[in-house]
Image 1 (cartoon, chains in turn purple, orange):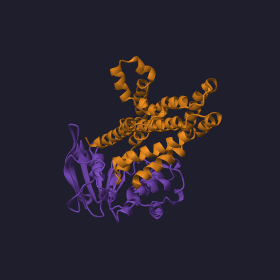
Image 2 (cartoon, rainbow over the protein chains, first blue to last red; image 1 turned 30 degrees about the vertical axis):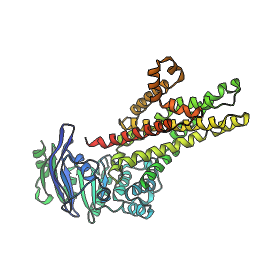
Image 3 (cartoon, each protein chain N blue to C red; image 1 turned 90 degrees about the vertical axis):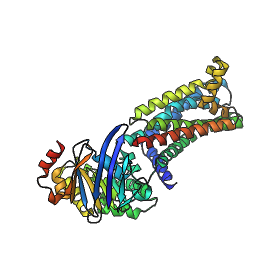
Image 4 (cartoon, each protein chain N blue to C red; image 1 turned 90 degrees about the horizontal axis):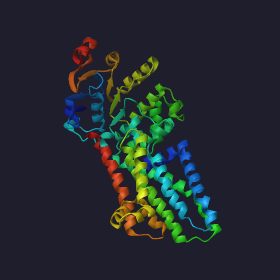
Length: 228
Length: 237
C-alpha cells in the first residue's frame, strides 16, 4: 500500500535518515522500533507529509506520490507522540475542528461515528483538559480516524498510559487494523510482538531489520544486538 | 478559504472562552481610557488625538502579548504537526490565525465606542479627524499583529516572541514620534519617517488618507505574514 523508497533526510548538513526503505502492506500493522533518536519520528513525519524527504520517494500503491498534496493527506490519519490537543475545547468541538480542516466539510455524523468507534460518546461534551490520559489518547486516535483514512500513523500510542488503558488502546488498534493499514512506533517490544504483523527496526537512521513478526525469534535479544 | 475561516473562528472562540481574552480587553480599555480622561477635562477640547496616540503606544505592548502564543504555542505543544499533517497549508494556518486575532482586536477596539460617543456628546470634534484616527489605529493594529505573528513563529517560547515583537514595535513607535523626528537631521528624519509604522498610521489621525501610507501599511503587513509562512515552511531545512 505505502512504501518508502531510499529515503534520506538531512537538516542543515546532518543526515538523519540514510536510504530508508519500508513497505506497509494492506490492512497490516507495521511496528517501527528503535532506540531514542534513531529516526522513527522523522520517518512518521515524512509519511504524514509534515516533512518532505531530501532524496528518495514515497510510493502509494507502487506509484510515486507527493505527500504534501491534500488528496494524499486525506488518506492518512496521524497520532503524534505527545498527542497534542486543545484542552479548552470539548471532545466534540475538537473533533469537529479537525474534521473541518481535513475535509472542508461540516459533518457532525462523522464526529459521532468516530466517538462511538473510540468509546468517547459519554465525554463528547466534556472539556478535553478534564479527561483522563486514556480518554485523551482516545480523542487523539479518534481525530486520526476522522474522514476514514486508509493508513493510520501512530507514534507511541500507548506511551504514558496505565496497564488498563494500554490494553484498551491496543484492542482498539487491533480492531482498526481489520479495515486499515497501521504503522506504529513503540519502545515496548512485547507490545510490538502482540500487535504487529511486520516489524522494522531502525538504528541511527538506517533500517537494520524488516521482517514479519512470525520470523523474528527472540525479539529482545535481536533488538539489543542490532541497536547496541 | 473554508479552512482559513475554520482556523479564524477557532482563534476567536479561543479568546472568548479563555480568561486571557477578557483580561487583555479589560486592561487595554481601562488603561486607554485612564490615559485619555486624565487630561481631557483640563484641556477642555473635544479631541480624540490623545486616545489614538496612547492606543498606538499601548498596542505595541498589548498586541505582542496577544499574538505571542499564536504560532509558538502550537509549535511547543505539537499542534502544528497535527494541523500541517492535515490538508492545511502554512499560508492557511497563518492567515487564519491572523484574521481570527484581528477580529478579536477589532471587537475590543469597538468597545471604546462609549468613549468616542462621550466626546461627541460633550463637544463637536472634527468627524474627518475622528474617523481618520480610528482608521489609523486599525491600520496600526493590523501591522502590529503581523509583526507579532512573525515573532511568535521564530521560537517555541511565547515569551521570546513577546519580547522580540515588543522591542521592535516600541523602537518603531519611538522613531515615529514628532519629538524625535524634529531632533534628527532631515535626511535621517525622512528615513525614520518612512520606516515608522506609527508615523504612517498617525497621518490618518491628521485627517489625511494618502495612498502611500495605505500602501506602506498593507505591504508591511504582507511582508511580515509572508516571512512567517516562509519561516514555517523552512522546518524542512
